[in-house]
Amino acid sequence: MNFKTNLLKCMIMVGLCLTTLFSKAQAPNTTLVCDGLTKLLTSEVTGTKYEWYRNGVLIPGATGKTYNAPGANPGAEYTVVAINEHGCASDASDPVVVVNAPAADPKISMVINSTCIKNEVVLTGSGIPAAIPTDLTYIMEWRKVGSPTVVSTSNTLTLKNVADKGDYTLTITPVWRSKNYCPVTSIPTTVTIHPFAAKATISTVISGYQNEDEKRAGIVCEFNTVTFNASVSSTDPNITTSGLTYQWYKEGIAISGQTATTLTLTNVKSADNGIYTVRTKTATSCEVISEAAVIDVKARLGKPTISFED
Image (cartoon, rainbow, N blue to C red; front, side, top):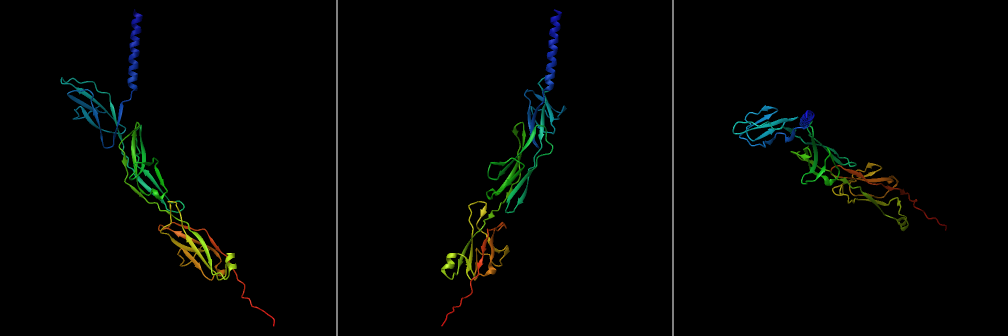
């Protein structure tokens, strides 16, 4: 009998120990509140009066069934005691920890690479708070104004196409236990991407032939007229064919005054030999040089005389 009694007592003691260990292992319920806001806490037991405590200290004037609790970092612990009409108080509730989510301050900086080889804009986002409570993360989302689509979740956004021009915003959102809270969005940043200039194609027309043999040969002889025509064409949306200016070059040196789409050389001589190109340029100074056209003027024979014998 004594053995059974002792065994029962031991079992009860073990159960109490396990219960104590388990209760100590349980972390307090924790909730998140956005910076500058409060979290509504409600007593699940109805009384006629209540006492709310913050970190074990009675909160003056907090005597209602609910309490709007401000957050804190790393967190403030709240408990409540319910009192009935007889003045009898309940045990204190299990604590609830209210954690403050530091407010993000999204900002966008812009770097423009305006060369025609790599015409791109890089937006860089910042503004995630430095001190973040445990289990709290922040996500970045880039959007083009007027569209709900998230175009990037990185801290940078690179834009390369003319169609990408427009206004962009960065939204930073705290994420707590897989739930999004209080997003903050930056002011819009305007992005303008200029098109490249279309590269011109040069066609060559030779005129002023002195006979059909010259024409059939298709060569340039002295005193012919050579006309270079520059034309542009492109279906690439990042390349423009309108609003271009032109400049003709010989051997890489600009030919003064030759800024039309056509370059005409009359009465050509050996001094006109060389490599000719044309530069096309946009209003935003994006320029490109054409492939070369070459002139190789062939000398004519001297004017013959006719000899004869009487």
